[in-house]
Image (cartoon, rainbow, N blue to C red; front, side, top):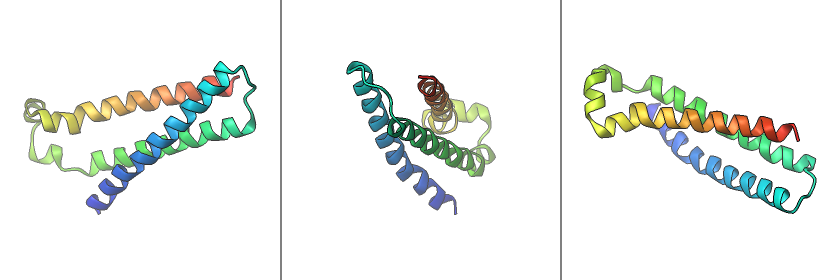
Length: 111
C-alpha cells in the first residue's frame, strides 16, 4: 500500500510539473501580448490548482503513513541530511509552493 501511494506521488509530480509549465507559459503569453483571459485560460489555471492540491493530499498521506518517526527521534532525523530532507525540508517547501500556487490562482481569478 505504502509503495503504491509513493509511486503515485512520484508519477503525479510529473503531471503537476507539466501543468505548472503550461499554466505559466499561458499566463505569460496572455500578459505580454495584452490579450484577454478566456474561459479556457481559467480552466487551465483551475486544473493546475486541482492537480497540485491532489499532489499535496497524496504527500500528506505518505508523510503520516511513513515510519520515519517510529524508527528515529526528531533529533536523529535532523542530524541525518537524507531523512531531514524527506521528513522536514521537502514537506515544508511543498507546502509553501502550494500556498504560492493558490495565491497565484486567486489573483488570476480576479482579473
